[in-house]
Image 1 (cartoon, rainbow, N blue to C red):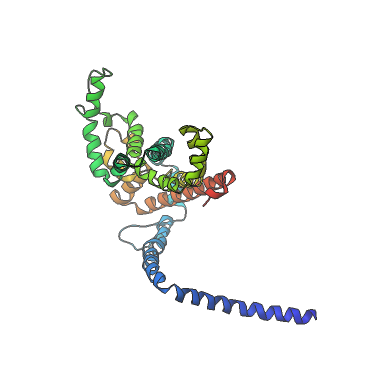
Image 2: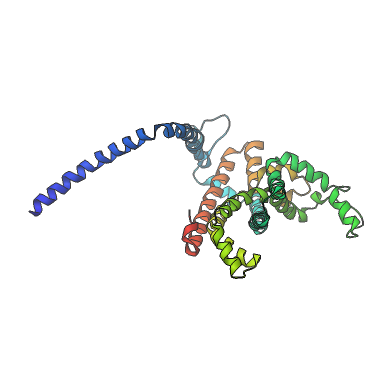
Length: 322
């Protein structure tokens, strides 16, 4: 009897793959219009995201413009050893971590505060205008905003005029020429540009909160601040955790556009970040192997940070993990 059961189970296991395949084809045919919409995106990812992965082998070779990826000499981990001994690379790492930490400290909290302020406004024209003004800088490129920052921070610029009007300084000074101020300029200007746009995700989550929670809280005598702390923030905690994970994983990916616009010969010791240094080594100096090795190393470290942040967030809130 047991032999018959075993034989029947083996037959069922053999038929299972073909059954799953039939179910897959049936589901694919049923959703054919949707599949045709997805296929161009899949092709795009294969061409521009997966095929270029082959080029990462340059990091382990001595690649030049006169050679091909296949014919370049294999040097193993030599490029990575050069990176570990490169003082200028580690200076760029320090600058990247410094700027990214300030951006995390201010830029992670600012969108939540902006979203709460907009959400608490009464529905009407002012609420729409406030929201539009808050995320408008996101649509301006760093070429435009960088030119504005350079003008505002010049010796006779807007910031120096305001400081002189309040008696805080006597003589104007070009702030972008002072390396000690660059980290603050880069981080705060990036927060100003992106905090309104980042608040949209939080506002969308808040819009899905059941209004009866707030009605019950008001009946119990809870103030606006109490409602925010007891209802709004706990219910958007999964989105906050998800954004935290993504922000931590991008600590080593400082904004290249912003750096290329605001960096000059005076503030370069504090303005040079990993992305700009890799760009200069690869595109300006033609050391493609070095630049690829540096970029690959940064990507690996970013992946590790992502996994650590995901693990920490998982222990705090299961709904916030990736």
